[in-house]
Length: 103
DNA sequence: TTTGCGGCTGTAA
DNA sequence: CTTACAGCCGCAA
Image (cartoon, rainbow, N blue to C red; front, side):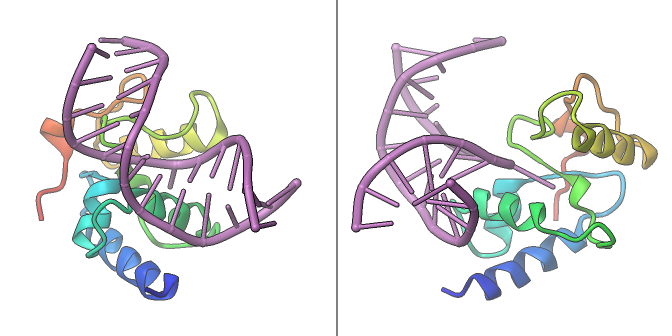
């Protein structure tokens, strides 16, 4: 499998996540057709350019937490972006019960 | 060529 | 709540 194709599929799915909702890495991987490839999603998103329009901030880990160390710039950035679109973020945690995207 | 480490996950203790 | 561990795998050292 080409990393190219996988990347395409991942971007495709991530772009579908509506504002105000979140999805997990594993969820994206599965929807893109690559179960067990959660890390590939993270890898892929970490390489996105600054000016990317992809809503990378709407992707969090399976524990409903932001996968960046607390207090890091990236962590703050993601938290703010999510809150800006109405997602409640407490201590880097998001309630999947309420905000997880159901395709 | 091997190693260690990620924006991970599900299961188990 | 925390480790631990097996899966998974590209990538830099």
